[in-house]
Image 1 (cartoon, protein in one colour):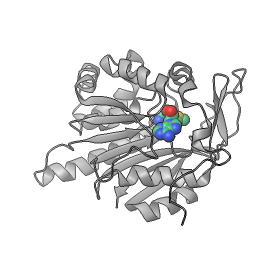
Image 2 (spheres, helix red, strand yellow):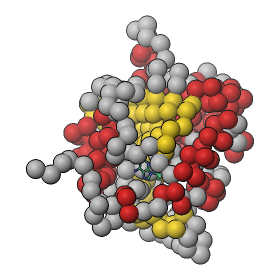
Image 3 (tube, rainbow, N blue to C red):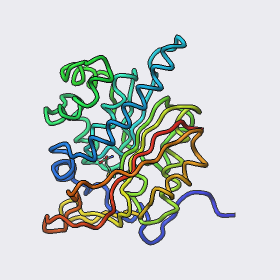
Length: 266
Ligand SMILES: C[S@@+](CC[C@H](N)C(=O)[O-])C[C@H]1O[C@@H](n2cnc3c(N)ncnc32)[C@H](O)[C@@H]1O
């Protein structure tokens, strides 16, 4: 019988050089300024975490003990969305340059993340950006690891995974393994937020090509039907600006939009 884990197939994750993923180039393209879709995706995630946390606090439970963001790349907003609710956060990232970037960034969060924090702050008692900077340095830890082999089972109480499962492979099976490994790394009943590119077939970071497997809202709902006790999947339009660039740095309109999912793990 074949083992239920990915192997080397055309377009599979292990065929790409993730150590060449350039966090500065990727961050400049995607997060230097907050784009409207990210504002929506971030708002959905943090308001969901806030609802679940308030329910928790109302029955006398404290903050979540340990959160996870899988595949942060150079995006800090998923981690920031958990910061007010969580005593410790692990950022599990595979690419070496991304790991180095994240270790530097969590020591002193760049001012460019302030507009993102301004979306989060009203949900967490209007704490200011200095609080976020200080608390991130205290609570976050970056771990180099692989979503397919290094995620524990039933460990974390809250989690995020943005633009990862469908944007690390061209193989639909690996997308499913990625989403499964993420949700099952959570204690049953834990809140999660996940974002996906809709209809993407890959992307350049600088002049290096990385794979994607096109997913639709329906595909994500089907996956979460099996992996989540409760779920909501929403389409978020591109709002005009494509974050995909060709090898010369010109925008390419080659994906449909974004998907944001919130839910509770099984
Ligand atoms: C498109 S980027 C998404 C980055 C970020 N989460 C965001 O919201 O923009 C895909 C990320 O998946 C990471 N990745 C690729 N293969 C991985 C693997 N096997 N395990 C964990 N992360 C992986 C890449 O290094 C990269 O950071």
